[in-house]
Image (cartoon, rainbow, N blue to C red; front, side):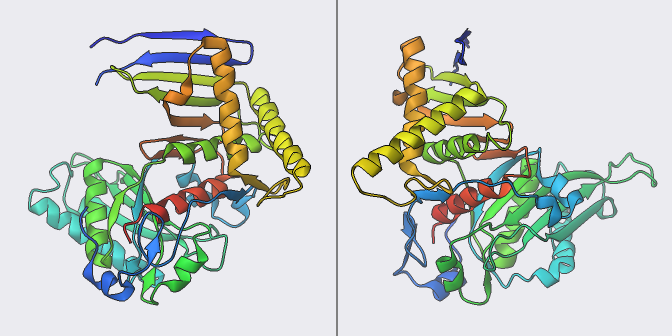
Length: 371
């Protein structure tokens, strides 16, 4: 397999070019409650949803004041695989101990049937814990985040050896659409975003149990190029308050074999470009005597500002390397605040701005749901 790589640098950025080679239907009970006439995003649902064109600018929030630091440490600085989850039928936050026992019994039963062949030990070596992560919600409509942990002990471990964490995941809703959440029947709880980390076979078992227990549908959630651009802009906007390190962007160009281009921008250069783009747009709108949504408002970020920022980065790259990134797709964004990949993998590196990131991901999950 042929593989080439090269690195080129400019005073304000660096770039790496690399070549590389080569659901199930929704549950009947929810359909009966919802009906087929309404719409959510691109597909049927309860309310009309559109891509957001203006967002609140991220502001530092001391999450440790409202969230248990031990639980918070389990969520940050770890890479998670994203999934969307349709509303959970008859889910109760007061029944988490019961859910722990039920999921444990399900995993053991699957092992006995030979479906969980990678599982070590017997039932006594396993422990499943459901817990509430209080303090994450940003509105009264947001349901409390639920953390799921699976611990296991090796078959060769002694009786005194502690179990080790082999899988973790959390269900959350941060600033979910109030119209959508309020329109749900009372027997449904909206926790549309699932973040999971651990063996894929365990992830599949947990998803299967959730679907059976709560009559929901779970599917993969990628982060498209537009939302990656949003994250690049929102994270850059945080630089004056929290150093973002370097802004790293990766594009994939549609050639054979695919061409990957990694573009690294100095944080101050990224911030100055972002500030100038916002300033230019504000001046143009003032000259035209038309103020759009979020125009000139430091507390909001507009899609036009995001587009101009990314275009400015592309133009800067073209001036140095004569390569047009517009022909490609943005596939990864990384700063000191976090990393997001088109494949639906996310790493939140700082708790200060995690809610801003989770708000965007919650919206992505709601838009991706089939109903």
